[in-house]
Image (cartoon, rainbow, N blue to C red; front, top):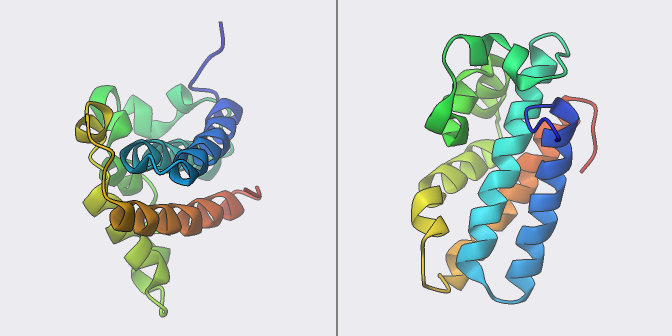
Length: 149
């Protein structure tokens, strides 16, 4: 069985969920696209935590995990960002505000439980804005760890 806490698995999952989100967007499945786009960010943040904590290969080995970032907090983007001081700093000091705007868009619209169980197609405008923010931040997060999207 694959260890889903492995950094490489998280990186791969972040890329695949972004591809899935794009495919759903193209099929006008707005809520599903947002749901999977949020997971792309979640997985990329977990892999960045591994990278920044000393190029650790498994999320379970990180200080963040050992200090209690577990359970439902593993899906909380704000809690994950709290483990990444350098990314917080970059977002807050970004003179163009593009990363801050992307982060704010993502965290204001990604409500994973609500999206997971939604029986609605969702809102096209919100979904497109959300996925643009996801693509911008995802690329940046991967670049910070020497990866490309």
